[in-house]
Image (cartoon, helix red, strand yellow):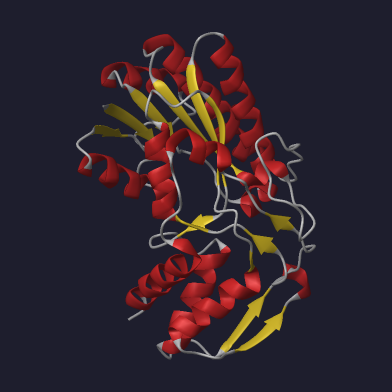
Length: 296
């Protein structure tokens, strides 16, 4: 296929480009050279590419940043997503569009609650999550007009290459720096009791690749492991790989209420056969090794 990827030089995009090219697909990798907020430039780029499929990854992806700048996040995530939808409907109406959303669209649950299916209510609690929900709704409306949109609600994923604005790579960097003697053996953390559904980024890329198959029905799919892990387990695993035992203190300013975000990916599994292969331990090991190499 000819695949067009927005946000192609980001954390997921960089790995997805290489994966798809390795499978023999032709990839147009668009990033800051094609600002999705510029509808005219975006439309011209898509028209030139004439893609069979589009993966829309470009986004403001930080929940914390979305609270600091809600308007900027909406301009990128909502208006940019709308521009992508309109451009595809105009110049590549049969192309499969993969709209990448977030498990954060559901909002937090009580720890121990059942995993969330695609029919669960969405109660997004951040500008980031609300913008993702809004553009997903636009995509599903476009399907009623004959578009070919698949939307994901992707749960927490990490791995080599993710920047340390996010909790998992932040922990991994600090642990690696302590092991290298570049940081005092102390860490300050937030709430370690919350439960998350963690995935290795390469398992997520496998899911996205499977969803580009035109035989997979349109609609919404969770990308999730269905396996709960606390933030404490994440920290413990990274510290063990680094071989350090720092003093860990909780900063009240970093603490958010204890909650759970756990997905059920049965719909995706039934449609594509996808299963996460690397697991939590593989994700932790890969992240720890990446930061150990970076801080040497």
